Each structure stands twice: as C-alpha cells, then as structure tokens.
Image (cartoon, rainbow, N blue to C red; front, top):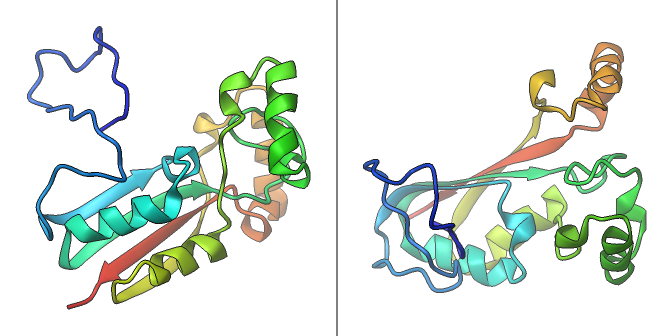
Length: 173
C-alpha cells in the first residue's frame, strides 16, 4: 500500500496488488490480517497515532504488528546522511533540508522507540510490545559512511547506539 504509486512501476504485470490509500483510513474490515509490517514507514507518516490505531483495527487478535524505525538519536540522520539532525528543532529541520537539497525529507518525524512503544500501547488495544535493537549489514549503509560504520561495528558502538529498532506488538484478545 502507498499513498502515491507511480504508473510505471516495476510490479506491473505481477501478482502483487497495489492499493493506493491513506493509512489513517484503511479499506479493510476489522481484524482482517494476521500480521502488518511497517518497515521504514512510520517516520514518513504525519499522523502516526491515527495510523497506528487504524493498523491495530485491521489486525486480528493474536496478530502481530512489526515496525522497523531508524534510531531518532543516532548521530547520523539515516535519510540524509547529515550529522546530529536530532538536535535541530523539527520546525527548523525542514528549512535546513530544503537548503541542502533534501527538501522531501523536511516532513520526516522519527519517533523514539520509547515513544513509539507508548503510542502502540495507548491507541486503545490490549498489546504486548517488544523493542529490539537493529544492526544492519554494512552493505545497506550509504557507501560514503560504510567505512565509519564498519569501525563503529568493530568497536561495539552500534550495539550501544543502534541505527534502528524493531518493535513487535502482539494484539491480545
């Protein structure tokens, strides 16, 4: 699913069905899915709490919500490669990104893993939530940062300050 999907997509002709919709208003019945995954998505959603509530609505009891999110406090902002972006107030960030040629990144709002867990528990569904640190393979890291990433891995810095988190929520009956 996506809010906008290009006409000339790679999936044309495959058995994959693309549904263009807003995550706040999913076109599915209650408790329809065994699992829902949001990998590198939630930070791009402006109404995160509403989106999580809607995702939980379509998730079956005993179903799993799996979210991967970058670490808000990682020293390098993973979308732009810029250092210490988390220290810049959200409203100022958009202007900086635009000035540096990263205009589309101005609306990204990465929730902390703690805040994301609280949002999941707060949307009105009984859940058990686990938070795990993510260590990415160096092949998926920006090529200009890969050398530093490998050093950070070697000295254990990535275990102390992970690049991201995997949040798993099990919706209870």
